[in-house]
Image 1 (cartoon, rainbow over the protein chains, first blue to last red):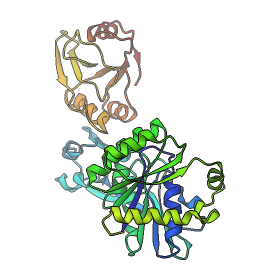
Image 2 (image 1 turned 135 degrees about the vertical axis):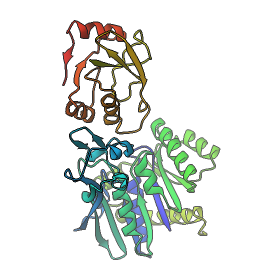
Image 3 (image 1 turned 90 degrees about the vertical axis):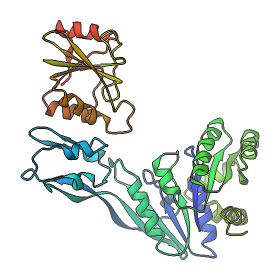
Image 4 (image 1 turned 135 degrees about the horizontal axis):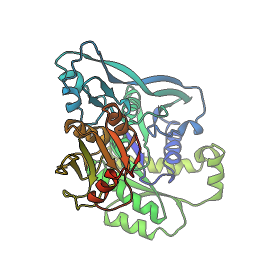
Length: 284
Length: 111
């Protein structure tokens, strides 16, 4: 079972839900928790510990000037604008390169070879007996999050544990990559106009990807009518509502877990898990 | 010598366009006789890397100077390497207005 936690809007509590769900589940079965918010991973704050980082690399072209005759075929091929061929030299912009390998294939002089370039890391730590935490981290200045997310998911999928995937906010490529192949998705929202607006975008993405989604309303002020109306209209189940609470905020801000500080919440998160499994069609 | 102006339309009366890579049109003026060609920018709606690709259009058309509102870092590097001079025109107005100012040499050179 692969379960994603996404949101549209940032700061709604994706990581809080993912961390508490993983913590609760890991008391009865092995869980791999995957931090796919690689531009700002934060699950390690809930589960401190020494991780073992492994480099994530992507191939980038290296052009041999002595073989290149500036025919321009590589530059014409590159739809990302990463290669410009001038009469006397070739300009390469590594940050525009998508590592497709096309330039290497089209070069008639075989003047292009590929070199691995590091763009980030995936780190594995074992904070609890049945909890593996995989943290994808994109290097500062690297523009492509997707290969780091792909690698984090690949490493986490090596075992047959339950996978809980914490995605980035928004609806762009990093989110789509994190959602790809998931059996179900929790969409975390809050009862604000912004929360609803971005929930609509995120729900559209999961629908298009064909991933069953259910809603968690976090920091509810009790006035969730508009979100509830949206959920009814779109046949989305509100699986859990967490009230706006100073106490919960305080637990969070000292890096603790709600389900550890207040164990009675574990029952609620187990209930959430049962609903997620039902969503995925794995039976309640 | 060929000059390129970024424009929102295909004529000398068209308003100039401040963006370079995503400009709808490149108006290429022959400074000798004032004749011009309008090239539709194939990268106007592109996703990423449009700056260097648009610069390649200018290189292919043997342009020697560019007049535009703003040229991004990557495009600037390509244009500079290709020896294309860059001038800034952000006053608003038509391609003709920008051409007049270029001819009077009142435009600031940006690269």
